[in-house]
Image (cartoon, rainbow, N blue to C red):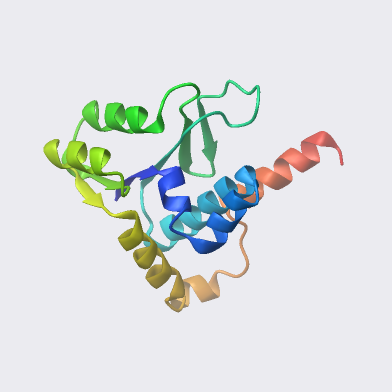
Length: 163
C-alpha cells in the first residue's frame, strides 16, 4: 500500500488532534498524526507513507522534506500542500498504486483523473480505528515490547545531546 496523505485535512478528522489545532499546538497535532500513521503502517505492513503539510516545519525552518520513522514528510513552505500532492501524483511512476487520503474536492478530482485510489479522510479514520482496535496477532504478542522507529529516533537524538 502506498499512501499519500493530506496531513492537515486528516488532522481535522481526528478529534483529539483537532483539539491540538484549536489550542495552537500545531507540532503536537502533526506528531500525533505521524504516530497514528506509523502505528497503522506497522499494523498493515504498509510499504510507503507520504504525508504533506501546509507551511513550514517550524517558524524560520526551511526544511522541505523530513522523515518520521519510515514515513516521508513534506512541508510546502510558501506554497499550498495541495500543489505538492498534485505534483507527487502527477509524477508518480504508477499513479494507480497510490491511495490518496483527503477530503479536498480539488485533490480528489485530480487524483481520480490520474487513476489513483482516493479515500475520503473520514473513511480513512474509520479504517485506522478498525485496524488499531484489532487484537494483536500471536506474532505481535510474542515479539515483546519494541520501540517504534519514531521512538528510536527520539532516544537517539536525546543521547546525542548528552542529556
